[in-house]
Image 1 (cartoon, rainbow, N blue to C red):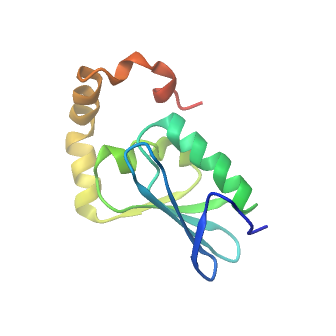
Image 2: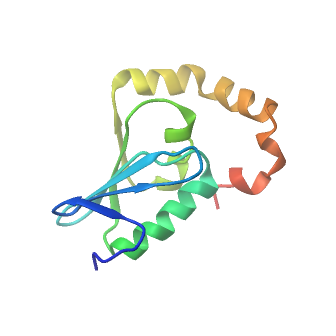
Image 3: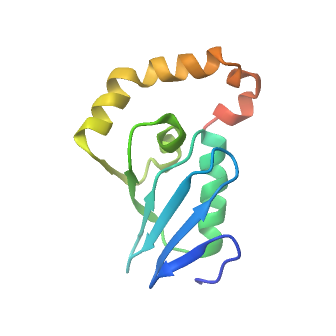
Length: 122
């Protein structure tokens, strides 16, 4: 099952998807037994949308999630991939651990808390 209208195939079993909200590039590499996802989007609701679109691309489970960098619009959907091994540069992890709560507080302060559905993990 590799036909999709939303995913662009870049190479053999390598895909990307661009989203209009914040314009991220989300990558997927389909392995033999699992998929590698590159970045999880900005919120749990956006990560759930990503998971729905992944299911249209493949039946494979997500085995790995790779964060390209620590910015919230690439990492704040991570919680929706709890079954996957999380990978990224050690500085990415450090920035999320040290500054993630402050980033979230800043976002809420800018009014993103108005749509609580964005932030629910399920």
